[in-house]
Image (cartoon, rainbow, N blue to C red):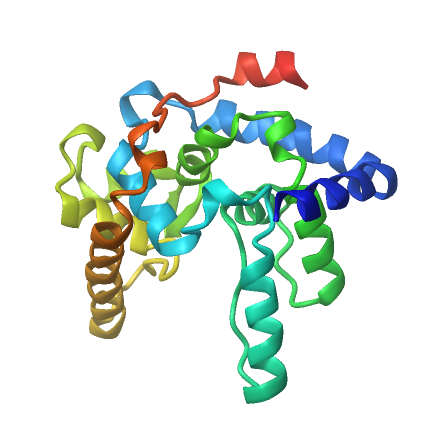
Length: 221
């Protein structure tokens, strides 16, 4: 999978260089706006994110080729649409602000995702996504999510962390209906089960909780 991602990254630099430069500047700005040491996403939240959204995170270079092939196969055979977005791809989507359902947008997203580790170390990307992700109404980023929910980042329970991460899939609207609460709770329980399944992964033991500062990102760019 990493060989495929490397090839895609070369194509991205060649064909999307200007877009990549713009994305880097936007990424630095996003991090500077949302970075707050008091609200750094805890390691458990990062592990829950990987378990639920991208469990092959440490094995690919931005694009999960296995997931992409699975999605194509299920669409052809079952007519079912599923997602294959990696954490890198979701970061590109949030920072670029492009959410249209178009194959061109998806391909650009995949290509640009393979370049993110040129700016941010791989192990810091889950924290970055949690930092800038959309959790619901007036919850743009991890800090706002914690503040609106009335929780402290360093005192989140496992279920509290799971429900917070679940809101990335099921954003909380201004007026939360019972069905959305149920979706968040069920998703949270599912994330905890997945975490138990994958927690013995040796990569979890080497996790780095530090988040790239805006100054460091600016120097890298």
